Length: 132
Figure 1 (cartoon, rainbow, N blue to C red):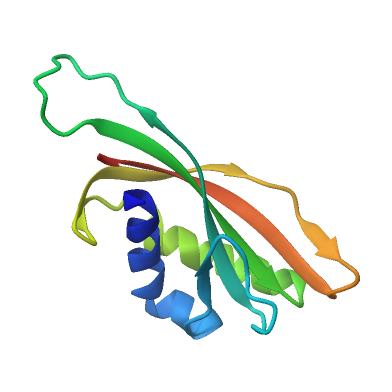
Figure 2 (cartoon, rainbow, N blue to C red; figure 1 turned 60 degrees about the vertical axis):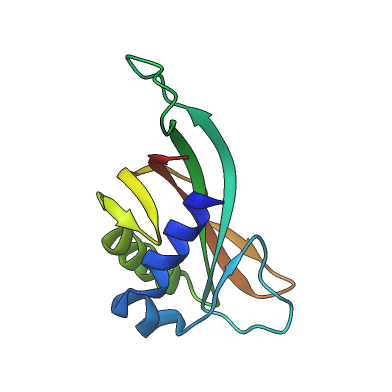
């Protein structure tokens, strides 16, 4: 849950992201009645990062969070991902009460189009290294 708090805090605090989606940033899935453009973020996995000594202190972990941009046009999802990248990449320090070592962009997923919803989407994964 810590990594999700970090991601939400960074995205909701970004003027660039807000200019594109306002407050439409949701965990897991986009509620059916919500208009696009919007952002959905999903926790994919969390793994322990080995440390040199096991002193019983906070454990450093790496969480993969997928940030999915949703929009009616293709260019808007690309603009959203640029704004997300600017808001998240290489952030560190205490964010939303979580000690973050670093955030890096990892895998960009495929461009998708849902003809029934007439909506484009693409997910990009970010690795959030933080104390758990």
